[in-house]
Image 1 (tube, rainbow, N blue to C red):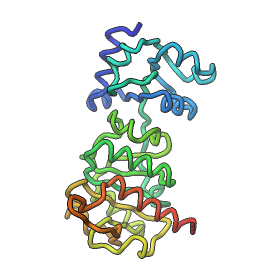
Image 2: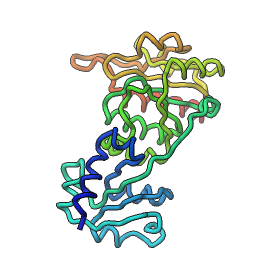
Image 3: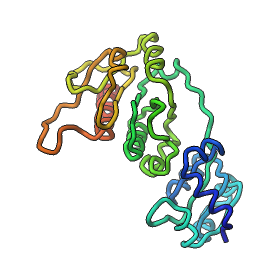
Image 4: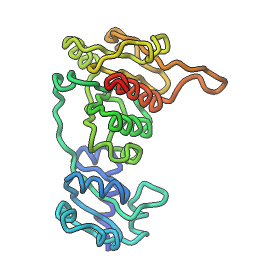
Length: 256
């Protein structure tokens, strides 16, 4: 039986301030919990139906510090989902230091003021799929440990490192390394026609405002996704745009 104190603590982790103070975040779902355990991630607390716990091997259970059996009503009380899964877990955050030289060696996605958790989660998932290992977000972007981001990213957090940084400072330093900055702008050259490289930054802006004036000077290459605007559809969702661009960069890299 899950205690009221533990239930309150789990619910409190829905707030960014508490997550930051505790250095903990919540993942939900049978699949994602199994993926985290299989990847060697240590889980501080696993709250799950008895049958889910029994289904885990002894090797996986060794990676769990504390296990609590819970009924459906318990999980419903602490879940952020309308229909809770069989398992929920608390995971400790990893402290990661951003190394500008590492981010210069390959493709890095840079996001400015992404507000929608679903968009950030989708971008993380696409980055993991297309082999992009690093994402840099402006400080005013949504928190990667937001429960909705975790759900949308579907385990991508295991494969992509996400950093938060002052973008003018970061882009200035990245340009000093001779790394091209590919900015997604309506007036750019179609990404399918533009020369691309296997090292660079893909810069995407806010869902409604795009890339701000303050960081436009750091863009070395303006690119766009060609398409046809129609009534009610004047642009692509930023998550969709990121996926298309990631795909094209990967296609060029491997000459697919």
